[in-house]
View 1 (cartoon, one colour):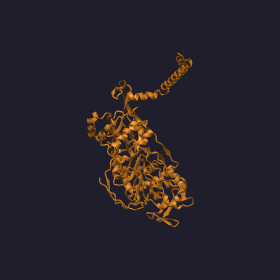
View 2: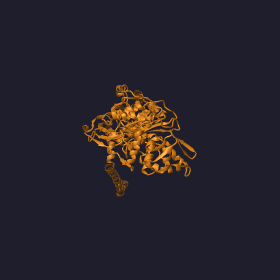
View 3: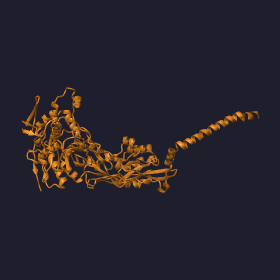
View 4: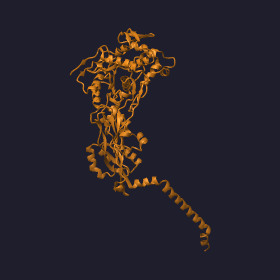
Length: 614
């Protein structure tokens, strides 16, 4: 009796009540935390256990050329998926055999999907063929958690052209997924180069979602809320390009035998009419799944077909750069229109003789461009000076990005005093370094894209346009064409000086004795300038820049042909034919190229062989 009273004493009851009260407080506090602070997160986890989400891929946006021609389309593709929570690990070997997939690869992809969400389907193989899909369909009853979905892949309606410009898509990498995982899921394709990469956010569209209720065993019991919560996918926006696809195909056909690049643009807007880089690749290789053998073959090819020579090369421009120096000298008052020199066939500076192509005799600024007199510009750059010349180079967009709407673009190189001090050391270089720069040689490096913008500026008499490949984006949500704004800058150079160099360029093409006569167009007056860039690693590079028609330019063009020699023999005729195709819609003649003059270093018209056939 005494023990019972002690056990039920007021003190013990108080301790017990305190413990119970404390437990209630803790539980009640935890309830508040779960309800108020973690409600959304826990609700999602609950939904994951009771709701299955099926992602619906959007249709990627299309690409059209300036004339409304569809050039980049989409077609159907089938991808096999695995839902980790439903997949029986005993079926790895069976599924790997059906898909002709390495077992470790399959395990790795499922493991990555499980880490992301074990209830969401993970793509284990994309773009399976119909035979594989049929075999899979026959075995699905033995492969719980395995399914397939219909997606889209790129197709090319007009042929395999403009590969570097249009670009390609690849499966998202682990690094990209870690950075962009909120928008993508593993196995998604993403723009990897060209316009596909630059305009990825416009082209990709928005994913849709279908929600299904599942029971405790993970089996679907039907659409959630009769599909009221489903989200329809939104198609990607279309791109309307400035590209003339017919011109692109023709330009590629002319460049196919060579290594090099061609860029043609509208001199008033900067819109790209054609952009060729040879050798190139078949973009169909990247549509769907690219095998390791195909990828390695492209990467290891010594011709570097994946390298965009139109925007990424950095070669000396040779004599095509003479007009820039002439404009700088005229604008700065270093010379006037009447300025002349006597060309004796070479220019001696110190103990070195810089040879010219010919003895030009008395030469003014127009004749110096028309007949490509090197001596005139060997001397002129010494009068202008290195840093003033470099400032005009930057004014015309050299030595910096052109702002092109492709991710792959070089800035080139424009030497300055600071550059030479850094490379050679202060006081370790002389004015002799400038002599070669005057004729577009030396350390100067430019791309065909930069040269096309440069000659467009000459064509339109001083407006530096921003080159671009996309004119409009078709917004499929508002069903409107949205123009993309591009910059243009009026250069502080008098128009009368542009008239002088333009007339010289006209004579270069139109008048006997001009180095660019091979670029002439029957019945249409045009202008241009040849260039031959010395190459210490092999044959000289052939350059031509020009525009047409002369009075009202509609096309500006830059052509680079690697390792073939004279600019007059290769780049000039190619440019003339492309200009003619654009202006007339057809070319009723052919051009036969002379054998390459390996190791040559001067402009000449001696090796031209024309065969015009109507």
